Length: 536
Ligand code: GLN
Image (tube, rainbow, N blue to C red; front, top):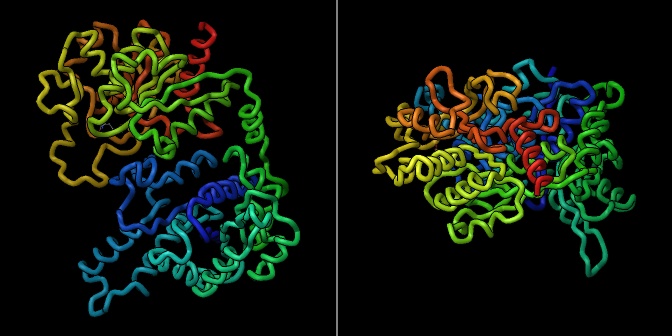
């Protein structure tokens, strides 16, 4: 029978529930358990796909094309197992399902209410992955903070589910904050006590408390928290600030979070967890033998979460190359033809980021022109690839008004244009070309040598594409399509022949990079940047 672990958050948001969930999952996986993590988000959007990255950080896309919360990225990066639509559910989706059922007559004669109809639908979704038979343990992270109005039905669903599942089949981990008051020189437990009281008021007794803290928790503090929150002494877990999120599984191991969880679930420890490859990764990450500086040109650079997966991919690729990757964020709106040399000075490589809309486009194009002409390694992702195509069209092919029809619908040279299947779509949510598609790499190209094979799949999230009517012109002039979708001929990768590293993809490789499997495009891009830095 599948066992369920629920992770709730108290006191404040941003305590890192996603990282704690992923770390615990990693430890359980390292002991031989099949584990997955799902997240329930209390907002009313059906998914985060329509949210501005400033609101919600990056939108993470799964193999099956779900637009999801960025925590799913952490789950995949830690576990190296793909997630799916079932791993991220919002209040919007729960209500949509219930309302659809109501219209179909599923509740005929009944008043449809939060309890039991919404809570039943939440419970049904909480059990879907468990019932698939694919997992021994399902970790469910509840978004938001206990006490929020919108989280209430979820906490109630957890209360009911625990009762239904029976003793020893589920447990609740509550993540709280133990703040340090500098003036008093003390750690304070009261916020944690209050947060647990609130949870108790809703009928949920946490089994384990994970306390985020900037200072070590003394035995006294742990005892005090345990006493006032009705948990075992050893179930008060310290989660101290770490220098990298990838340290957290080892910190949780030290605190025996996994051992305590297994004991409470009456599961065998199966010996010690096998963390050899994880430790090897950390060793490489922390002992780099070289350093490269890479520019990330984008328009959401004020918010690091907007490019979460890209930044994490650089960490994986850096570790693989035993090289520290310093990412310098450059606001695309700030780049002009006059200052581009200065803005990109000292960089060993430049990545032009994905994005939507025309803000910052000309800066991205200026940056690419400079990189192309100065033989600096370039990596373009999605909109970054489209900008590379536009730049090449304007400055090499002489198509002065080359553009994407997303930015200029009237251009005479629409080198990037809307995909045919997109033209009839009216609704915004979940309607882009989403999820994994196959791509065939041309033999002898840089892309084929990087991947070491000719058939790949990568994840997409876009409406516009390379306009194939221009392809032969581009290829004659040296920009070749090295990756093509075999079903509909869409150009998925372009590269330049006469350049040390100029590769751009219409897909999002950053979504598939994990600790165990750093993405080859990132690994090779960092290696090219390293070679460039040696040349300098
Ligand atoms: N805006 C572009 C499109 O829709 C690129 C999208 C992206 O970068 N994810 O095709």
